[in-house]
Amino acid sequence: MPTRLQLDGKSLTLDLLAPIARGAEVSIELSPATLEGVARARAVVERHIASGDVVYGLTTGFGKLKNVAIAREDLVELQRNLVLSHCCGIGDPMPIQEVRLSQVLRLNGLVRGHSGVRVELVEFLARLIEKGFVPVVPQQGSVGASGDLAPLAHMAATLLGHGEAYLWRPGEAARMPAAEALAEIGETPIDLQAKEGLALVNGIEVMKATGVSTWLQASNLSRAADAIASLTIEALLGSVQPFDDRFADLKGHKGHRRTSDNVRACMLDSEVLAFHADCDRVQDPYSLRCIPQIHGAFKACLAHVGRIFGDEVNSVTDNPILFPDTDEVISAGQFHGQPVSIPLDYLAIALCTLANVSERRIEQLVNPDLSRLPAFLSPNPGLNSGMMIAQVAAASLASENKSLAHPASVDSIPTSANQEDHVSMGVTAARNARTICDNVENVLAIEYLCAAQAHEFHVDLRAGKGAQAAYELIRTRVAPLESDRVLRPDIEAARELIASGALVAAVEEAVGPLFD
Image (cartoon, rainbow, N blue to C red):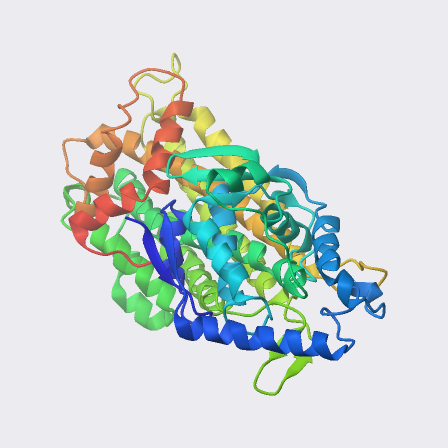
């Protein structure tokens, strides 16, 4: 059943976008009131053209060429030239689900009624989304102002029959020339009228789409990390005392409390901790004892970035902006990506911390000097290396993240003959955050494997309800490590359980909802 979206430019939420990020089909509803608003803005464009006015974006060139007036009979060619000339994308294609999010976000901004496009265009865009028409969009080539020009131009060019597109359905995607894809779904290329090419390419929907997708992935990881850490604490005979709610009262941070609540729930009724309640360990290492502070700080970042993106998915990022009530066309800087690039850098940095502490818990698990368990979690160490190099792989990913976390938003480079003299680098920030998030997912997968393997050495004792559910789930996909084998399939299986949401679902079935 397709996800139904009623787009009006004002009421889209991250929760509504989540099914699209997970690969759901979508149906678009545009209300008569919404289409009336689009028509009112279009009427402003038509009046200025009929009057012969020289208005930026409507009857002039673009950027440095803003002072070049364009004849009325050339306005359609102007929009076509704008789109095609901006198709300068570089590199591999964006993930299909991110492009689909970009399509929905771009349409949501246009139907707000301040961009001056025709009703026919927004209805065309809605049909393409519903029919699974997904442009092939190169990932590189945007500086984040004036918006995501190159990638959005590649999206727009497919509407004209240029470039390539996927015909997508869940589980399949056929790549072909855009004109062929349009014909396959019973559509023909569209001729863009005055202002419409500019409205399609001038925005930050690409960085927002990648950002939304990454934020949703990170929200799942926030809960998964608490569940996996709980299994690690059990395996290392750690203490539940640092997760006492009174510490959350003293700290005063919501993220701290939410993390502690999750871990306590996962460790409820633990036979392992009860059996070792009187062991001689005085204090756990920071990677265990400070989980509320470390994971809690990540949760605080997640909440902050989520609030910003919750607003951004309904923002108008075009230029110039039309105000039909006053018949004004005003140039401003709505296309600038700085409000998005800074939060994306923040998310990237916070994600690094999640990987850093997970990798340290892996070290606690595999190092016999720290774990009091067999070396590298092998039943026969020496002859077998066990999880030795799994920890090395986690260390590699955690260190790679540190390079990727250099803030892209602090960079700027002048473009367009210095007319666009400060840019956000928002797409770079989004792509870095996405890569870091993928790395974190794999580091947590390795911790998940190691924690489950460590639990084998006292498997006769049940872990807490949530930790036990996590352990039992992974054993449906990965057998205990008795002797050395190729570990890549195990890591991939653990990662899939995390990425799909299966881990969080299994733990929540055992203990109730977890906090992200």
